[in-house]
Amino acid sequence: MSNAWTENGPVSLPPRWLAFGAGGLVTVLAVVGVVIGIRTAWRDAGAPDIGGSADGGVDSSTLVAKPIVQEPPPVVASDADLAKQTAADADQAKADALAAKAAAAQQIQAKPSKPAGNIDDILASPSEKPPAPVKPTSDEAPPPGAPVKTDVPF
Image (cartoon, rainbow, N blue to C red; front, side):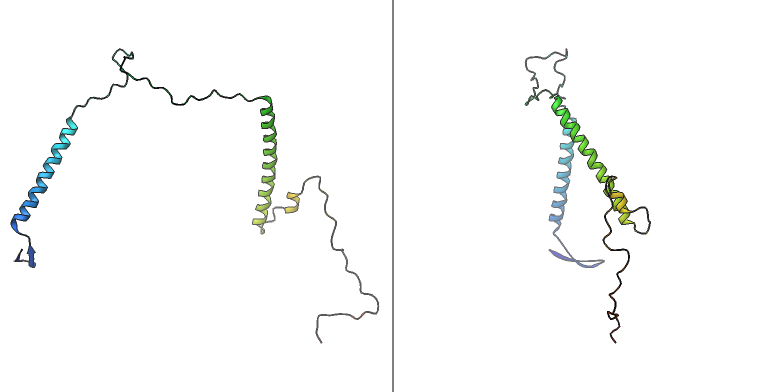
């Protein structure tokens, strides 16, 4: 390697024969690639004949495709299966109704600032009776002569 002074300062340059050899090798590889590409594009391999012979018939060298697995014929539902399906549809309708009630209750719980309805009214069935009150409506009076208790400590 030789050191040469260029306009940007001292730069180490490879030998001249190495630079020309690398450039020539790249050029040869480019030409070979173009030639291979052109040969591949112009090559007439012939498209495979999909339809068989020209007259449309099957000749002796043609393979006929056959399925690997034969599928069974479709099964017709019996009356018992139809009854089970009807019962399943009825159960699904009940489940959908319960899901709709639960969704309405969740919507009311999610938006407490908007009084859209009472959650107990939504979830209660029409045949359900309201529960008995737990707490009496009026407070009991203390027995006569008992000291009055207050929360004040003195």
